[in-house]
Amino acid sequence: MDSLGNVVFNDREIENERLELTDKKANYILGPNLTLRNCTLVLKVPARRLSLKQPSFIDCTFEVKQELKNYQSWVAASLKGCRFKGRLTGCDFGHWPEYMSLPWYQHGSIEDCDFTEAQMDSCRIMDSDPASLRFPKWPCFTILDPIGHAARLRSVKWPGRYGAVVVDELHTQPARTTAMTEHAPSIAKQLGTTPEELRAVIEKFDCIVY
Image (cartoon, rainbow, N blue to C red; front, side, top):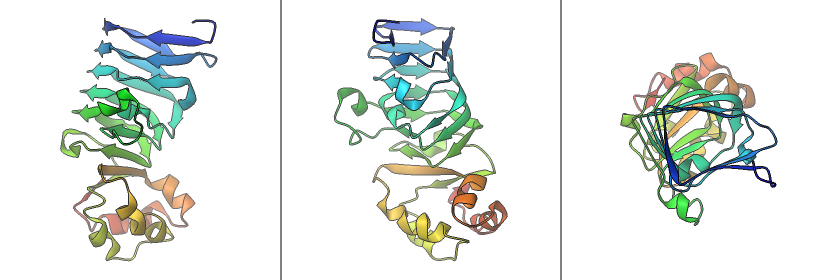
């Protein structure tokens, strides 16, 4: 760690290692020119303490020990064959060059990744094929191509305020959004409904996986 509290991993390849990013006083910076293969990364820091600058993660496992909240910087990483465990809220993955003009945001990607052991809420996949990804099962659910299916989804009555707050606004999502994952108990509590009421409507649509 340098005098500013930065722990920097860059300009190297790391293989078959376990990296514990857990020091609450450190700022972890991964990249540029960093490739990790078959590594396990233990994350237990708030989003503001973790910076990704175009790292490449191949067949890595992310163990998120502290909820990672409102973290868009995954779109500055290349993720292939990775597994995620833990709570991810308001996180975006994939290719979204419009998010920021900084160079490392121009090359994000995600493919062949597994989220089945994660709890995802208000997370999005950007400009990437959701068919290559494994999403968490119920009580999480994933809307595929939310913009393309917005009109269909608006054609039915949703419980509580879910229709007005989420479904009626799907067309305003960034154009690159290819999938959106919610955690039913969390969003039901916020929007005045229950997971069971949500599921009764979700089951009507083949564009929603759960």
